[in-house]
Image (cartoon, rainbow, N blue to C red; front, side, top):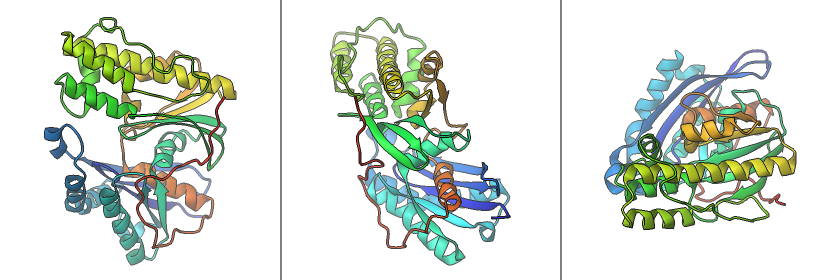
Length: 337
């Protein structure tokens, strides 16, 4: 490869319509040229994502978001060299919108098409921009996922731990709804916590004494419900829950890093934007890498980064018969204590 290659990425895995464009330089360095996201607001009245409504809004918005991304990058469709789109995991109806759109676009342009794994995209959102070298740990923590992977080599993922029930972001949403703080729960909890006392509600640490590195948020949800019924203010509930959840996420990840001898940790996904989480990880002494601006939540640029990695490795393009999958593991093995 002697000329820069420009890759379009599409993510419609849940309720964000994301289209991004990255440029892969001959030396392997990548940079984000555009990252446009339409975050759906229709779900706020339900306190959670309505899959059918999400799919419909993706269909309505994806053309405009693509044009916005091209304008931001100063490019035309003919300037693209590859297209990547998320094939899973996610809401099947929503995934199909971006997946079929990406396939059709690649076919029309005569360029390679690559299907991308949503979680790998989140990891690339931090690792690629920071030009990280393996090995490292990767914590993907979002509304739908809480997974901890060891990444011993490029493209190799070993599952270290995962949530046994709710994802962290899902727990934030549910606590915010319980406290009447609004949706989405992550930003609402973070804002309310600034006005509350983090020591007012005595949450117990989940999975105390476990030998592995799994996560669980069901106990914190139950404790939050009991505290709410006992009269805890929304601000105190938010502050106490956030402190407990952040402490649990950081402590478990640090134990895994020590066990595996890793000094670098990638933290990505929507919850990675939480200021308290970032501050806590900053005190661990580890080299902790977060995604750049706009790359925490679901977005198309992270999928474009995954596509750039596929191009760089000379990976065969994905068949146009590839389908959307609601549940698809990134790693098939578990590496625990």
